[in-house]
Length: 283
Image 1 (tube, one colour):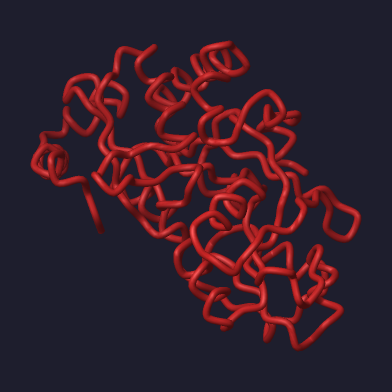
Image 2 (cartoon, helix red, strand yellow):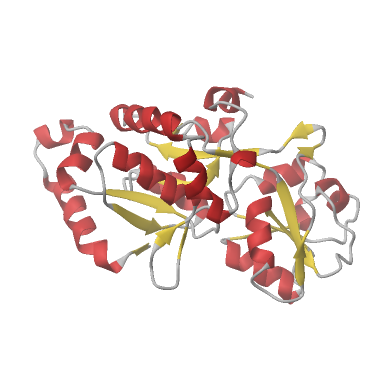
């Protein structure tokens, strides 16, 4: 686990307080605890442009920046980032390592069974990272399924593995890796013919290495929409924190301040959500 060094002492103290507190302390809501301690811990997975650490250690990206703006409206002005592999974000939230997932995580019914999602903050389609010139002619998951020799890299715990299987991609074609950097390395080294992620992540990855490119985004798998809608995750028992955050988030989304904040990460009015959390949890 990586916690920003300037904040780790506070985090340790906060965890110690939780572990050693009285029965009354355990009755305190997470929102009250956060306001009392003066900061909140958020989990992120180092996936640009959704949530990532810059070389100098700053936590940024669409999700952390929107979270900061929303939390500031709630009177919470300090945010600690806890770097976590994507597949460990939900377990880490439920185990209390942090209080909010701010990683651009897509809402789906399976995840909704485990955590509470805010309303989505964006909606986006899929794309592949491939070698320059796209030698395999890959355009979507169906094109991967049609060629059994093709290897597709996906990130552990992310939606892309399920999308691929739905489209008929065999398990033997799927290479599961822990993070975005591993996906990029697999394609550049030839261990995978393509890597699948959201269109914005793929576009960002294509700028970070020579000899690779992004395919044109696509939005359907086997006739079903794969336009992912990302949101913030909360423990189901943290109702006060969830409701306060969600209220401010809904008021913030689509405002000029919101659009200006997310445009540097490739988001904007064209990426505003068109489905609700309830619709995404029950589809």
